[in-house]
Length: 231
Image (cartoon, rainbow, N blue to C red; front, side, top):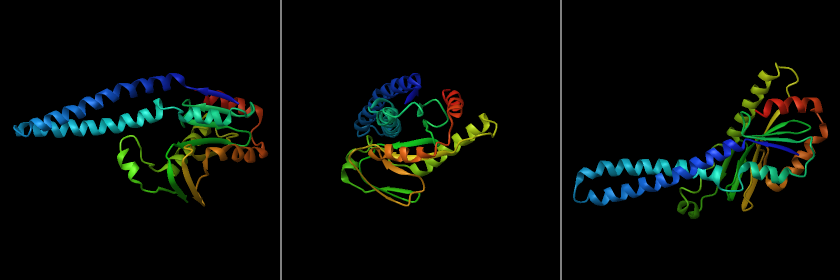
């Protein structure tokens, strides 16, 4: 398998993540200090609210960036590790196209939404839910919410489909298929008639091999797609 990753983007985002973390700490500490000062001086009450609000927002942004760009394995590393033994008719592009992770396979083009959450998660149609645990409360900033991963997967695929449609002038546009991938080994995944394929990492190889039997994308098309998706 061939892999092209925008390492410059990864490095820049990682640097910003590391810069935001100490700013978050300063804002929260500042809010605590002014909170104590407000006991004797009410004028410090408004600065306390401002500092704590900014610290809270900064903590959310910092957590998101650290989870995506600093903590390893990153999403691109997970995909590369899973697919490393696939042949050269598989091309993986990370952060070079309108969708973050794009795989050109013999049968189709795939986009991925990768979630690293643990615990009991169920996928029912387009709805994804996660069982509540008190552990998540104590990891409020470190543990991101699931969001709307099925919708995200569909939107990424649609965006890439349109991008390829424009680049290829509406001719020989391969199908773009969304995949929702859960990468945490401690996830207990339950899937019932999902709107998009919802898989754990140990299921991805078999899923792709099953699809590759159609060989719908020729070598010439793969080269053309590679030139477009390499950025």
